[in-house]
Amino acid sequence: MTKRRILVTSALPYANGEIHLGHLLEYIQTDIWVRFQKMQGNECHYVCADDAHGTPIMLKADEMGVDPEELIAGVSERHQADFSDFNVNFSQFHSTHSEENRHYSELIYSRLKDSGFIKTRVISQAYDPEKEMFLPDRFIKGECPKCGADDQYGDNCEVCGATYSTTELKNARSVVSGAVPIEKESEHYFFDLPQFEKQLKDWTNAGHLQDEVSNKLAEWFEQGLQQWDISRDKPYFGFQIPGTEDKYFYVWLDAPIGYMASFKKLCDNSDLEFDDFFAKGSDTELYHFIGKDIVYFHALFWPATLMGSNFRTPNAIFAHGFLSVNGQKMSKSRGTFIQARTYLETLNPECLRYYYAYKLSSKIDDIDLNLEDFKQRVNSDIVGKVVNIASRSASFVVKKYDKELSAACIEQELYNEFVATGPEIAAHYEARNFGHAMRSIMKLADKANQYIDEKKPWQLAKEEGKAQEVHEVTSLAINLFRVLMTYLKPVLPEMAKSSEEFLNIDSLNWEDIKSPLTSHHINKFKPLMTRIEDEQLEAMIESSKV
Image (tube, rainbow, N blue to C red; front, side, top):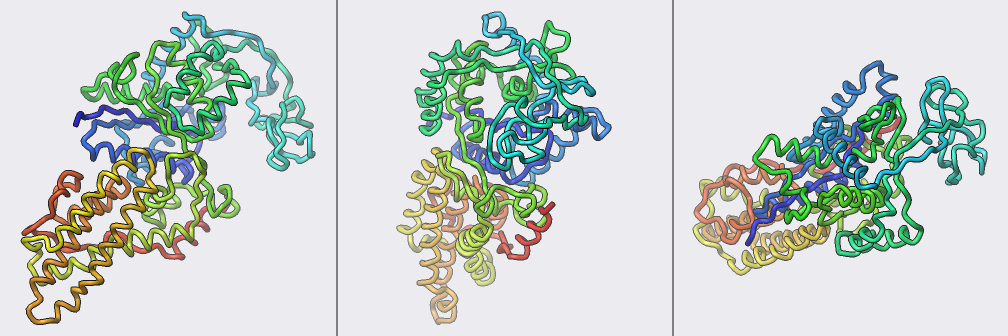
């Protein structure tokens, strides 16, 4: 089988806040898929970066009395620690505030400009006369023009759901200074997205997107594509647009270029060639995992900028839905706006990895983290089924048979059935139908436990002349556990590592499970995962409350 060459990205986390469980849905989903590809023998690289530019970061740094560079460096360190502790394994994690990103931002912009895809026009915006800066909608608050609710943002009301322009907001004020915003004109730079309508229609209907996404894009095409604003006036934390004095690339331009910048950094530190993955006509595979809220941007703006600047477009964009907790939008007051670090203080990260995998499909459906179901699912499946197979069999082999597995496989047919399910599970992983994969694995776990229950080695051990059968039954159980953990390895890498130590093998891989381990020494069994207790969940919720 030909080894595939794959580059995978996740959407960039913004460097103005901490990683929370909603973010982790995407990074865990991507990481599972990448780990699976590597287990299949494919060359697969996973890059990401902090999205580190923009007005919010500039203002927050000012508020803290630090330079923006210092702020984003601290955030990057915390982000990477969170990802690492959740076993999200990037080949390269970088920042959009990097020389690599500056280079490609300027290169792509200059190519787009030279080809006539950059337009300028004067627009009117809200302006803070005290701070002498243009204000994004989120930095203006006032009374909703529809329902009268106070303290609402300049673009939509969180009370009645109305959308409006900042000029309609009553008693508007700048969040930055408290001043009353005024209207002021400035010249902005736009990417002329409508020029790419035909190319984008062809691309979006060529199998690069999920059906739900393609259908949504068809609606947007009907409404007509709009030019995309790619500039902001100073003061702004970002890269200056070449040839201007006071204009900067808006974050939306240089954020996706962060994929390229991060990969370029990886190339510079390895023997990889950038053009093999991004040059037009490249035959390597390129995939983006994103949330459904940025589909318009990633499936229209981003491919168009690549087309217009003579780079290749991705093979596919995989969108996922939103995360709710206990059936509701994440809330600080309810303690369900849970940060990664808060979760890690009380719970095993691999529990969440499994639960997300169990809930994920190839579609863009929203996912609910129901904490009671989460507890029951992990306790039942991982602890009660998978770990149970090893824990109830290992002591026999260790104590009675000097840690050595039997010389023969007592139920070769049963073992072969477990191995034969491998291609089906692999197909589910490949298609990102992780939930189907987990259900197939748990069906096998049920069969393994049923086999142990039927044979009752703990009773056989008390009977005269049954020592050999006990040895063979418990050895088979451990071999079945080995197959299951191989299938679960993309989801539970840390538990897989502990299982490898227990089984005394270098690595769990799909090729090796074709044959059972026989006359093989194992090590003493150590607990692989403990049950989730109500107290842990309660502590996490309490820590998350405002």
